[in-house]
Image 1 (cartoon, rainbow, N blue to C red):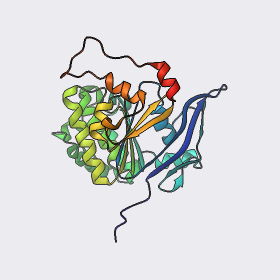
Image 2: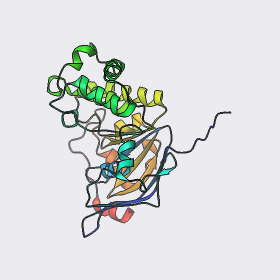
Image 3: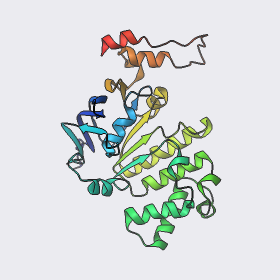
Image 4: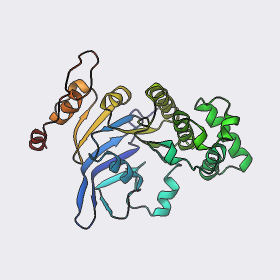
Amino acid sequence: MPDHNPPPILSVRDLNVRFGKNSIAAVSNVSFDLRQERIGIVGESGSGKSTTGRAIMRLLPPSAHIEASQMDFCGSPLLDKSERQMGGLRGKDIALIMQDPRYSLNPVLNIGRQVAEAARLHLGLSRTAALETARAMLERVRITDPVRVMKLYPHQISGGMGQRVMIAMMLLAKPKLVIADEPTSALDVSVRRDVLVLLDELIRENNSGLILISHDIRMVAAFCERILVMYAGRVVESLTRLDDAQHPYTRGLIAALPDPRNPVDRLKVLDRATLETAQ
């Protein structure tokens, strides 16, 4: 019989990240489980969202000190793994989609070679098979005329197409965990929804778990099944609907959103003093 309550893909308990000799706290006591679902992590710049994602990937600089009572991926502790073992997981089992494809793609290699290299590295394919896999994956992410696009360089494609290429590279190995860090913030509004729909389709096909990191709480609420709200390095609230928000920080973020149905002359500003007492 199918397991209706499968174990989490990722389990995080009491994650703490500190930087430098003075042990400046960037993330404090973050805990959550991720199954085959979409979780959003939201908050303003500096709240610890991206640091949390990079701590899971073990991609923080040497000045970072990571501690957790548990940080397990598919039941295996990530903090116990060597850098070589983590290198075997990254890209194949755990994928990271960055904010701006212009800084993620290699500017001196054409698109086909970059996607094919990912196929050779993570799937162990021959050069011919990797190129065919690259073509098929670019077609899967709805890039028209993939053979022509494979010959182009990153500066010759649009931001939206570049993000589709990144999604193709990151998801061709069908990773169990995908961390998307502001994947649409560098894109035109007209293509943001298309990229999110595409990402959602591939996540569902692969039975993966997704962590979507964003400052756009409205977009995350529409796309994700759960929302973790971070403030000053801590998760202050976990929600399934914005209407259920209770914490003053979450309510402040929602109040600061422009509402075309009820325009105002001045958006509300967060009351930091209230937030400190609510911590």
